[in-house]
Image (tube, rainbow, N blue to C red; front, side, top):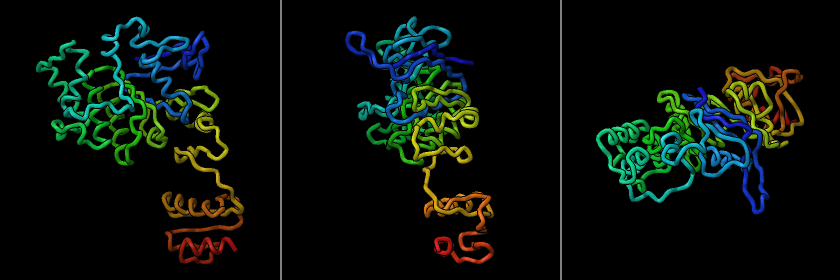
Length: 326
């Protein structure tokens, strides 16, 4: 069920005397409850501009946005804060607060100006902290948290708002690999387990394609292709049009981008397992040798130390490459 929809939306920057700059236009998008959508695109493609319009930080240049079937312009700020939670990349100066105090700030739309928490509010805060696995850090100052922990605390704050929609702008930016994976998995489970509609922008292609239910791909020509992850990846060329670069190609079997490497030769490759095949393919490509099932030369690899070229044994990958280069 769509909780957020756009109708012929155009976003960009307003200039003086009506000289507006349109970044994206003609957008008819929908975000469903219980699903996570990943907004993908190159730097400068307009992802943050779109998110700012969707979260009412900026007014769109044209078109409309609806949340829960109602135009966002019909909501007051207080009403909107009960419908939409935002986690941005901006580092808010909250280092002097504990995690519990930070998360409690998410209750403000429900507690009013004075922000007094009752027992129910405190339980919501505790549940939000538990949802992101931060119970052991509840009384730790935010300044003492790692980047990954700080991001989890900000997500918990959004959860404490109890909004049906959560929008995150680059939630994995500046995080290490482990923290990126943990954050993406957390958001995936929040969408499924708590029936949230989650929209995030990301440059983490592989994790987005693994964990996002839907993709919104901003292509190099300014168009946006949206749909289920599988449909976008398999049934359109949107992924290759994301960057519009001759140096990159999207590999659907790996669900990630690869550099286009010039090759001067090719071999037929037979390997014992997929992981070994990937390692061997990378080693060959690095040295200008492609993999083609129609090639005259056959390389058989049962391990990195059991390799043969047309039946002639090689002791290592290095020896194989040396023989192929002759």
